[in-house]
Every structure is written in C-alpha cells, then in structure tokens.
Image (cartoon, rainbow, N blue to C red):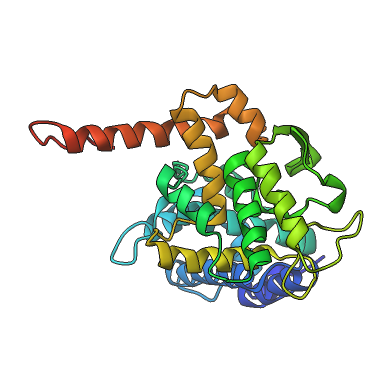
Length: 313
C-alpha cells in the first residue's frame, strides 16, 4: 500500500511529465503546457491549504477546492479565457488519471467539475479574390516545376476541399486524375471528391515538369531534393505569400479548405453535400460555415446601411 502522504505533488508531477515524454511521446510544447497548468494548480493549493501539497492532499480535495481554483484563474489581472480554463481542466483530469494508474489514487470530485462553455471559433476563410490570388501566385519560388507543384496543391485545397495531409498523401498511382478522386481522411473513412478539369490539368502539369522520378506507389508531391514533400514546406510558402499578397495571419493552407466550404455555401451549395465533400462525421461541424456566411452578410449590411448602424456579428 502506497503511503500517499509521503509523496509530494511536485515529485509526482516530474514523474508524470517523464511519462508524457517517454511513453506517450508528446511534443515538447505540449508537455510544457501540462507542466505550467499543473504547477499553477499545485501552487494555488499550497496557498489555499497553507501547506506543502502531497498526494493525500490531492486525493482528499473536494469539489469546492477545484471550483475555487478555476474561479481564481478566471479573475484578477491575470484572468484567463474560457478556452484556457477548459484546457487547464483537461490537463488536471489527465494528471489525475495518471495518479490513479500509478498510485491507485482516487478522487471522484474531479469528474464532477464542469468547465465553462466554450464557443467553437468560426472558421476564417479567405475572400474569393484572396483565395484566387493564392492559387495564382502559389509560391515565390521562381522554378517552374515548384510553381506548378504549389499551384496544384493549392487547387486541391481550394478547389476540392482537401486537407493538406490528404493532398500530400496522393501517390503516383492517382495519376492522371479522373473526374472523381477517392480520398481516405480522418478515421480511415473514404469519400469521393469530384475533380474539376482545372485541378486535373494543374496536377498533370506538375507531374510533367517535376525533375524527380515519380515511381508507382510513391508520394506524388516532392520536395526540392526529391524526398516526400512536408506540410511544413507548404505552410512556410504560405507564410511568405501572406506578406507578399497582404493577407491576414489566418491565411493558412487549411484556410483554403475553409474557403472551399464557405464559398460553396454562399453560392447556394447544400449543407449535406458540403459535409460529404469535407468528410465531416457530424453535420454540426459543417454548420459552423453557416455562421461564417451570416457574419459576412451582417458586416456588409452594417457597412452599407444608410444610417451607418453597426450590426452586431
């Protein structure tokens, strides 16, 4: 039987972080977030209970103690947002699950804590002209084959609504692109995407200009040295385009997918069809784009209203 009172909370936190790094192999930034959130929790308890915190203290915490911590984080000059509160609560629950597995520490109160309701942020699409500029420019690299490559990828994101990972997963076996493309997305689910002639033509142009040998079963899109193209390279190219074209920071490769859905919806597209094209499991995920369209209409109305009345978006 483990003597919980003999193990300090800080010592258990170090072991927990080692677990996240060594066994779960989480990213360094993610682990830093866990360390920051849980250290603040332990520090609050030390002041709240006026003692050095051990595992027995963590076991004996009541619902009011967790609520006091969350209330503390939501007030004062260093108050954090509802989204940050939810993240912090999630970190605590993960930490307590670890304590339960390692030390058989049980605390039912943590499961009863309700975090604040967090409104999912609306997608941030580009304007039609902004998306067109991105596709047309594609990259600041002057090599024709790199320009053709990036244009093909941007078209797959904006013209077919693919995720960047899905576009880069295409293989040489997918050439030449036909009228439809079978894409396996999240959860291993396959969906059929109609391919516009302009997209197929752009991909074929890239394949013809690519200086590297394109072998069957290998990834279609290549980096400058011939290896598999990384999403980070496309993200870096997009970052340069933002400055060149004067686009906002929200202009990312994924924003082209948002633009695909939003512009289809604004043009009268059916929500269910857009759901299928995007590969969303739940219609509620796709419905976020109706909020984008409504918000845009409200801004236009507010700017054009003869009395200059600002319409709340």
